[in-house]
Image (cartoon, rainbow, N blue to C red; front, side, top):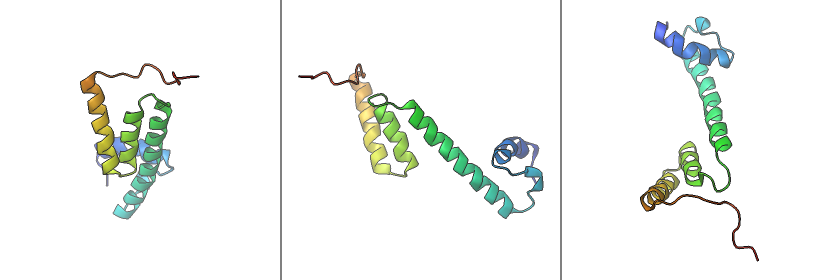
Length: 102
């Protein structure tokens, strides 16, 4: 049912979710295995985004990607505009702590 390329691509992914690609015989079985892998891949992406973001560091990048994950086009556009503005202005984050202590 699979090409060599398909086996190389899906084999390790399906194995990761406990599915032996050699046992897949129907389109429905393939879709079920693919959905199981999609859930894992989504979680891995979310974990990667969260692990790379820290308060004040890459906030717009994190929020833009998070908006994509949450299917929020308006929030995505807002964060992309903020990123573009920051790049045009040459702004960078130099500190994340409160600089206005009394």
